[in-house]
Image (tube, rainbow, N blue to C red; front, top):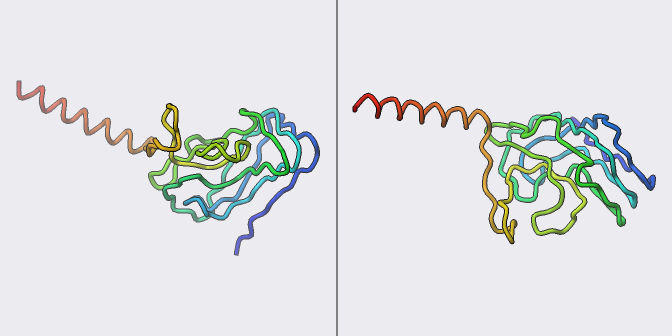
Length: 155
């Protein structure tokens, strides 16, 4: 059995200096088990690359996403403090992105693995679209090329 860890940083300042934070995650839906970095009452700045090790996850559609960095007790995180090493992270046709904050604007300094991206607009929580994996995009492009070729041969 794999145990997931929570690492709590209570120092007033977490400064990423280009390092890698490796996290075990069963990549699936919102409630998937995962390691969590907790920033307790401080500020996260700099840049940290997040490497997700998928531990048996089969992918699933997310709403809020899988919480991987939690800001508690007034902690804040800079918009560029964390970046996913492989983005999108492909898992069985689902492309996961590392995003900051919940769709409704609450918990703005938490970071989630999410496979729905909000469309730009006044209310992003009401207009989410699914993200296709790179493999699915290649397949669609190939199908389109075949259709165009067949149509051009008909004259």
